Length: 232
Image: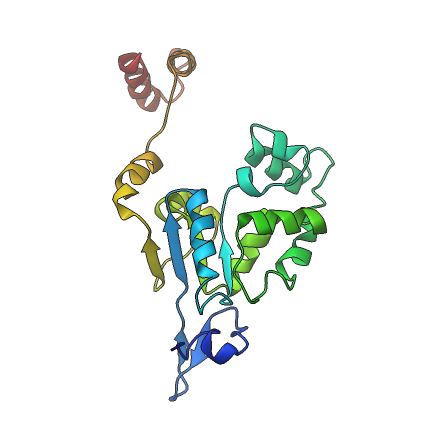
């Protein structure tokens, strides 16, 4: 039968405490962990959420973390090749413009269709509702993580420390499930790899030549120049 600690129990309302804490009998606070469910691709997240709808846990508070490639609905940014940079520029108001979709995030994250309902939802549901409400699905999904019992995301959101920091993901004392974990090696390798072209190396060498010839921090720039030369 359903467990007694989460919202699936007897169809009761879910715990609204965003810190996910409950009181023990002795008065101490017990932290209820979140479940982070990592998959290899975004398509697999859709499959998993579809299976979740068929279980007794379909009404458990959840969210799906994904990139702007899948969730940005801004008419200009979503069609750009550098969505991340353009999004940040809009949020910072660099060119005197802002993102109206971002300012409507609360309309989406608080909408009854995403709050614990008879069934789970997937990325397409989130984006479709975001377009209807003119609210940003990307940041709404991040807001929903605060009160979620289960968080779906691609592997690299859990493995890459930079992505974890940017998404405010803290895995300490949480439950982590990795679907098809034999793919973890490749994902971990990609997370610590970086691609660079020969033209970029030559440009870097030219700049380092200038630094060295100008006697600017030679002890640091000479070894870097040697690395560029050897790679070229």
